[in-house]
Length: 181
Image 1: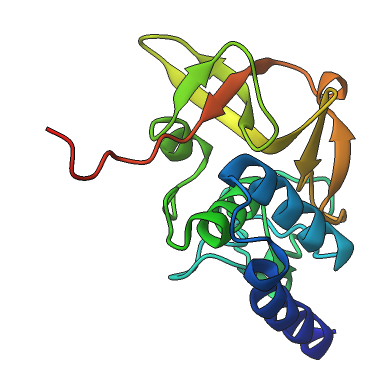
Image 2 (image 1 turned 60 degrees about the vertical axis):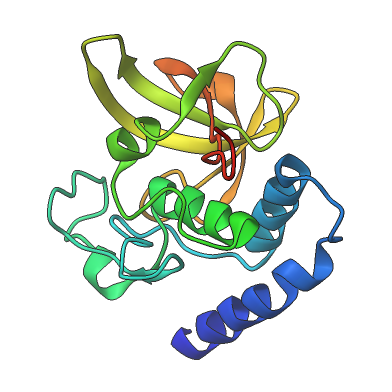
């Protein structure tokens, strides 16, 4: 299984940017990369995707509250929800724009949007001017769906946003301006 995952990850990394036309804008590129990752059946791992570099990694049992006991994360190579978004955005942007933090850290790097576009991020939890307490994120694909790393025992897959409770909003990454005054 480890070898299969390593080969899948290598193929994604080798083909992801090659299969995305250079002229393709970032939102469609993000969506295409998310579908390519889903195709390889990468497992959910609590804390997975938060190693030094974006991409599947062994998870952690620290803070684990999943249904499967004992916690399998420390022996599972995969991605949690914010690890998935981190990896897809890093592949699309060519660098780690979301960073290794959790969903709270990610949402702070983004701006809220009222009209989502495919490639935006869908956050769940509570987000106000004073409070950021999120617990989940997915990549918006359009038509009310998201690419999702949902929970322990599952693989990265497409889910309906409405099936998950406490939707907090859509957020978009805005790259820093370069060369402007």
